[in-house]
Image (cartoon, rainbow, N blue to C red; front, side, top):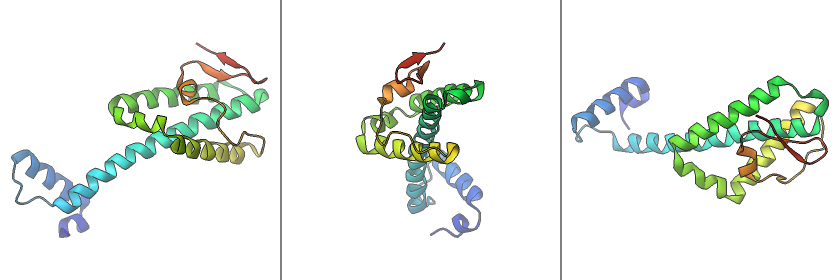
Length: 152
């Protein structure tokens, strides 16, 4: 393990980038480089997961607390969709998680937990009631009586 990596991560990263740009492979810290690159990919996956959780949580609150609907929730829903769209555009390989049933079930479970925590209500469906494509669709807002509505 590189002493610089342990002592000063930013300096280590700058040094490694310089070595890579110069094509000097002898000085590269391969073990830590591999770990950091892998960590970057996991970070992108966690970002996808966290943004979906926030989005679904707000859609659940919108659906089950119609009396509390407001511009703030609507703005959060729009912002998460925009950020998700950019994340998926910049890292298209993340789209595979949107087809992964277990990943989506975990996201739903965490979104429900967040909605319960934020509302003190325990009325949310245990399993997904909207396909992920609908959740990501611009303008989709669940209707308070169980239907769907779209906003512009």
